[in-house]
Length: 417
Image 1 (cartoon, rainbow, N blue to C red):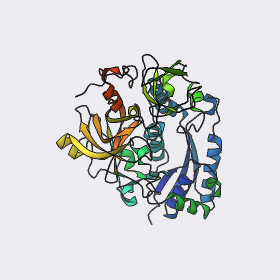
Image 2: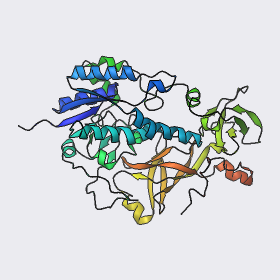
Image 3: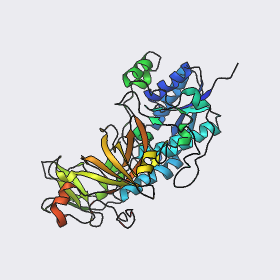
Image 4: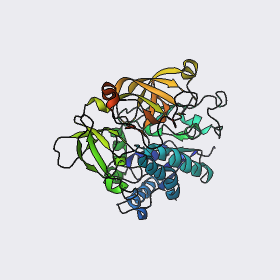
């Protein structure tokens, strides 16, 4: 009789990963649960729930009668995720640490530990996502390291694995997996990919996992949790006082503690003003934050951006983009926002220009543009350049200089091709 396939499942202490482990157990696999500690509570003054999360994950393993392991990636998280997070904010960008964490921690550190130290045949997580492989095909995959270079050899990896959207479109988490490597996806199971959140909760309630149902959905910075953002960031970055300036007439409306604390499109809470104003542009040279008086002000909308080098998941780059240098698809830059039709233009250095069919609100530097086509997540690229807003174009030469770029992010460092 063949030995049961060994699957190592990442456990967060929440309902999704708990039910993922339960479903794997039901399928007859040998399952091991692993809890990752990625944030050290001693590093800051806020409240960290890592200890309670670990205890909840351990209780899941007790209920399911599977082995439990605890690993710490505090150093790796700081070096590869949080330092990048702070660096991006210092540049005035809006990072997404959840995407970066999946790339470097869950699907690199945890992946290597599961296969190398625990002898796993595959890994699993509680993400709502699917791949183009059936379970048995995952177990047949060989370890294939991605070759170095600008693009993969198009003939090196046959039958590349596609990352597909989950059945529950409201919970689909392919956005957060858009930087995961082909190597990791080939050996990963997503047991929740075909389920709805409601059904997952029902499974937990009927199988002795009530303790994870009582937990609130995780929010805020990946592994750090929900807290007062301004106070948290100012523990690590020095305040840089500046002005709130009306984008319409140049009036100074108030003061702030740092232009890096604001992202385009958000409401700027300006002391002494009752009416809402929204961040439209930022000037890294002066520290001014330009604000607009309405949530639908044209200064908040753009239809052009340029990414850094794109991480393509299955086909690098897609054949249509290579052939025509242009390709129609959809993109989003926030989880759960509606997909936006767009046209990609490929540059020689692997970056792309993205032209939205219709201008979208609150594009910001540092966010990831995640690309989709026909239910497949193609990959993503970090937004490093923004086109002008319709309002800026209308005003001509009256716009503030470099209002959407941080220090060192001007045209010289991101040349058009």
